[in-house]
Structures are given as C-alpha cells and as structure tokens.
Amino acid sequence: MKSLILSYVRLMDRLADFIGAFAKYLIYVMIGVLLFDVISDKAFGFVQNWTVETAQFTLAAFYFLAGPKTLKADSHVRLDLIYTNLSDRGKARIDMVTVWIVIFYLLVMLWGATSSLQYSWETNQRLPSLWAPSLVPIKILMVICLVLMVLQCLAIFFKDVARASGKHIA
Image (cartoon, rainbow, N blue to C red; front, side):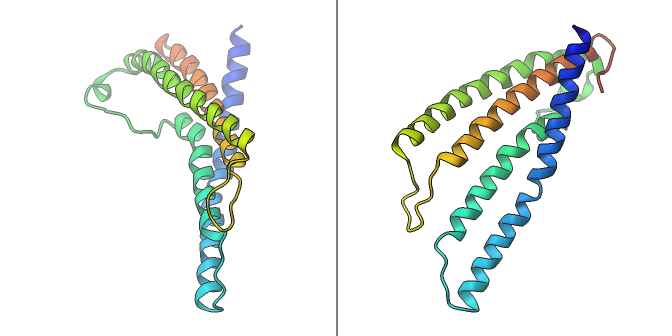
C-alpha cells in the first residue's frame, strides 16, 4: 500500500510540474494576441473582434492550469501568525486538517463548475459578442483543473501524513 501511495504522490507531483510548465507559456500567448490586436488596429486600422476574448480565455486557462502547481509548490496564500512558529511535524498536522477544508471548497466549486458546464453544453452557451465564442471549452478546462487540484490535495495530504510521522515523501 505504501508503494501505491508513493507512486500516486510522485505521479501527481510530476503532472503538476508538467502542467505548470505548460501554463507559464500561456502568458506569452496572451501577450502575443494582445500585441496582434494593438498592431492590427493602430498600424493597419483593422479592428479584430476576437482578440480580447481570446486573451481573457487564455488568462483563465492560465490560472486554472496553475492551480495544481501552486498547491504542489505550497506557494498559495496562508495566514502565518501561528503556523511559522510550529515545528515541521506541527505544520504537517495542521496541514492534514486544513487540506480537507480546501478539498471541501474545491468539491463545492467542482459541483458548481460541472453544473455550469452541463448548462453550457445543453444550451450551446456563447458569449454575447460579435465573435460569440462557445463557453464549453473553457468550462471543460475548469472542471478538469478542479479535479486535478482535488487530486493534488490528496497527494499533499499523504505527504503531510508522512511528515507528521517524521518521514518525507519526495
């Protein structure tokens, strides 16, 4: 059982690293799209009706995809008034509890995202603009990323259990 959990944690950590490495390049895609918009409008007088929404979708994809990596790297926001004064084992014990609060929150978000995706799928929901892109792809990505974040939280829980017992999973 230990080797199965260790394999799971390592798989989730590698997946979070891979997705995070991919996500960071989306900022350059967004910059490129917005630069294209400015140049085509100001230099050539061609107004594009798809660029702003594409940049918004790209930014949304960026922060959805960055979620698992942010959790893995422990670079999220935390109130550190008491936490910083705890031992490594004490921090692990606190994290073993709080990660379940995060999982609950993510599951509520996943429930809402799935409901929203279902509505978008059934109604072929589109943005009310000239370009009118479908919202289904970004909502699918949101659901996938929320699932990945829940799975990453489970990996974090297993790491915290190991840390609380004086061991470390790398």
